[in-house]
Every structure is written in C-alpha cells, then in structure tokens.
Length: 97
Image 1 (cartoon, rainbow, N blue to C red):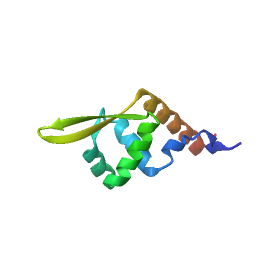
Image 2: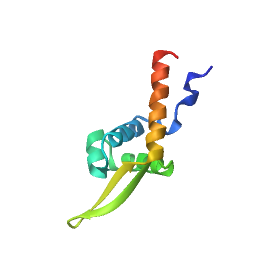
Image 3: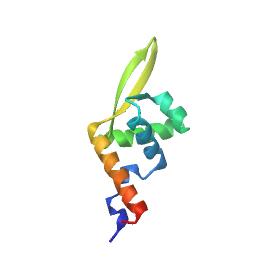
Image 4: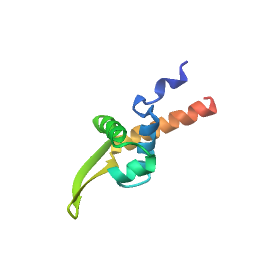
C-alpha cells in the first residue's frame, strides 16, 4: 500500500505549504505580508499563489490603501477542506498508519 497516495500534490512544495499555513491562521493577508513572512521573492510567491488560485484553494481581492494598490489573499472553503485533509494524511503517515 502506498502511504503517499492520498497526499495532495498541490501542497508538495514548501512554499505552498507555507502559504496555506499562514492563510489558515489569518483571515486574509496581503501579498507583501506573505512575502515577508515566508521569505519568498515576488516571482516565486506569485507563481505558487497562482497555482493555488487555479486549484480554487485561495482567492484574492485587489484594493487600494490610500493610493497604493494592494492584493489580499484568503483561503476558500474548498482550500480549507483540502488542506485539512492533507494534514490528516501527513499525520497518518507520521504515525505509520
């Protein structure tokens, strides 16, 4: 039996695990705050955010703070469910189930 078969491929990357983790504990985060928290470059963060958005695991809204544009991200209900299921599979794997 392959214990890794139930892992969600969308969360294989350290960056995507980090993005989902910080978004699960914050209602929403700006691009710049995430970039700082996760120590990622603009391009690297944007690429991983796009992949999670295409999977419908995160959503974003663009707004202006004063005259500065800001993009804010949050986890979708589908993303919360998928991430929790992935964490459960990781836990089972760690426990050797």
